[in-house]
Image (tube, rainbow, N blue to C red; front, side):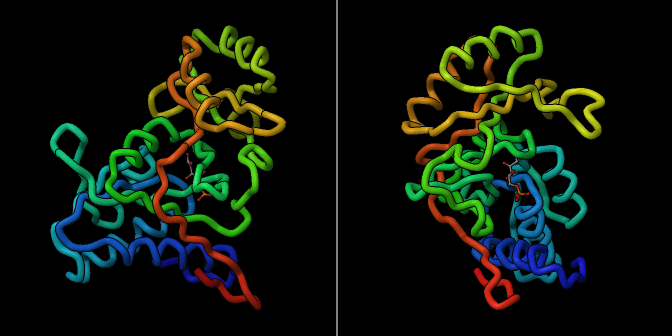
Length: 233
Ligand code: 5RP
């Protein structure tokens, strides 16, 4: 494990560990994407290597999750060969009081939604700063789009009242490309009043693959806080 005194990193480690501790032997586990879930994958791997956890297989939600699982020794499988998933652990960019989420900060929300929604139990790992009264208050809503449809999708989103922007990569050298080879449009909505309806409406635009609204998918939210300089879950 990385040795650090940075309280934010320590807090992410604690939340990841708390989620990893909920994994039981003989389980199929969805492995989420992002800096918080990375610690959960690491701890699951450590529990497997120590012999504490047996007969675990993971389903990665991204190339990043796959690389981390291999690094920490978590055996992997695919949706083609399993008939259920016991648990999924994943991060989020915003969480509302109804446990609805915005995800996709890492451009992985399409595969995350497939895996997280198949799990019997979906555990979300976040820091307290991700809790909001209304989705869309602090984070833009990611929408994965097939490249040739970017312009018409942008126009359709503007008609819905959103302010769309194509996500650019490091140093704006080019657009961010998803694991599926698509692009991401980040959308500012003033206030998302009805996330369930917006989720469906956006996915109905031709060219949209999936958006980052996760409505009614999360079961448990594990929240990390820093209290008196110490990480607490
Ligand atoms: C990736 C995601 C991540 O889970 C989300 O961005 C949270 O990441 P982090 O734990 O690094 O804040 O949705 O698509």
